[in-house]
Image 1 (cartoon, one colour):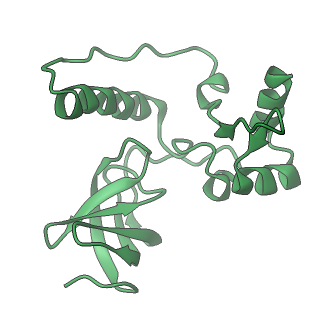
Image 2 (cartoon, helix red, strand yellow):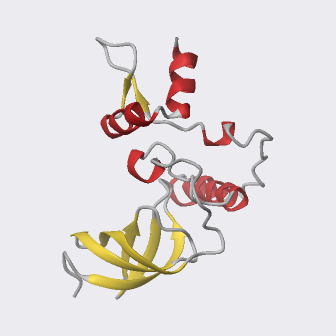
Length: 165
């Protein structure tokens, strides 16, 4: 039986729609932020529910062929760029599959989603900062992203701020 603080070896077989790696341990889904399809990792379990668990990467035993080095020094802490450590072609396939799964499984439709069109500007494809609009303030960044990006001069944050003005 899986419990909090266990360390387990996990093969990541897919990505969730939010970008977390998904593996299975004793028939239970385990979600691991920062993991990539094809990674073999040691995951430290931080939360266990009746049908799933959440872990963090303790060690990457074998990196996925889809894993790349992020071009942002804080992307693992910020949370604004959940696919920054995944090669672009795999990112497109993961996003296509997420849309198809939502339409078929949740929407009850039988639809095959075609290939997602790529864009030319490598920087713009990562322009995916989470933001929230609040009544009293025109723009409020997610707390972690703001704290981390303010210290580092995150170029994505700067671009989004300029776009919002």
